[in-house]
Image: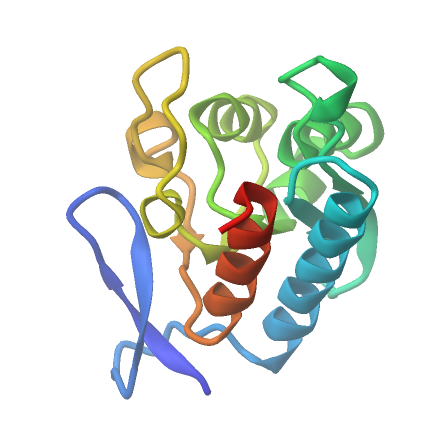
Amino acid sequence: MAGSLLPGDDGRRALRPGGDDGATVDDGDRVHLRRCIELARTTLDAGDERFGSVLVDADGSVLFEDHDHVASGDSTRHPEFAIARWAAQHLPSDQRAAATVYTSGEHCPMCAAAHAWVGLGRIVYDSSSAQLGARPAPMQAPSIGGVAPGVPVEGPVAGLDEEVHDLHRRFHGS
């Protein structure tokens, strides 16, 4: 179900059905978002945390994908951070700006900052931090828009967000 994105008061734009502003999460976006959920499920099954992300170029081709690796003890091993590192090393600035990062959960402040610093484009996520009841971080956690105000952000995506919530409940044993 496509919808339009309306500005939120915290810098996010949430998917709303039936809007008329023309901005939508389309079927191609949903394919990549579903891949993020597959990656999240795979990493959770392997005993790690439950997030997955995909970097896609302007033509819709997958360039890089990753999932959480924080069970190693390094809490910075988020897939969005790995995408930012990979993009900085492998893509010129114009290709980074035209790329989209799809992710199962909203970027944390660390990943949003890395995304902005390397000049990546749009972020589309399945489920927001607020929906997941994100655990307290060792720092104050502003929204993506509070960290990277120039980055277009779309999410959460209705329907797919519930799949992420199921993984989150499984991770926390509830």
